Image 1 (cartoon, helix red, strand yellow):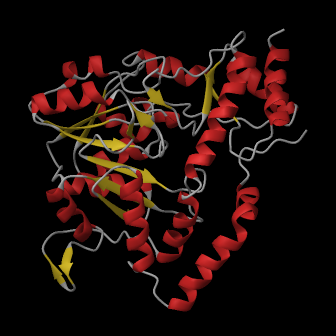
Image 2 (cartoon, helix red, strand yellow):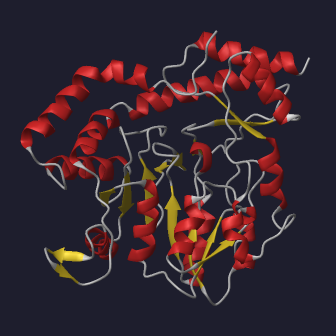
Length: 365
């Protein structure tokens, strides 16, 4: 059996008529930048995430960058974040002149461990940037409590978790600002790059739009330095179509994860889900003994896998100036040696899930 990592063509074929109509309508309108389609999608996204406002930008990375700019974070500031994430998370902190400060992860969820955050705070701490890794919300209540106690802001990197919930509240709705990515592999994806910020803070909602438009509130009048980062109308129209199906697709991901759980619990460490969370399963990530051998074995059977992430952020050469070293953040380092993400996407058949699970079981016999 041939297994795909992701079936974007299958997804497109399911929605072909709706998407083609939406794209054609934009093309015929001649309006491609910050048009009615963008405004309409932003309103739908704000409603979906239970936030007051949503703003489309050019990528998830830009969303993080604009969030930092909106909070005036820069040189001498420190931002607490996780070492077990995609490089964009600490990269945007460093690029704005601030310092990423890494706090180790909870080994069960792979998310930042809230019990370790206060020990990392200094007089320069200005924000916390938790990441909802693999589709599960961080433990946001203690994170928000710490932030409020110490006068910090929270920027939630929810790029992998749209549709997930934390104690019956949508991901994005608890932080000061949340950031999303619509990269083609995401649960809600466009056909290129795209991202968004959400917030319910009216003052922040006034700051964000100019920052995606060179710092201009009015054309050719630039009050601040900003950037050129706008979600284009074609992508917004596509996202508006696909947003209607997100909950259905996430429900199918949950079904697939449960099927994996049932078949794999005896031979690997299956993903841990906190009872108060609704997991979006952007990835189905196991911990496995002899991980690299298992990965090779699965590849020989036509089963692609991915390692998210093989090198923790504190050990990345580009961040060597921060002077972290091996064993500084042992849980993140251990996870990097053990995690393996198996294929999961809404179009997967039960037969494909069973084939993958049986191959994993065979390896450990």
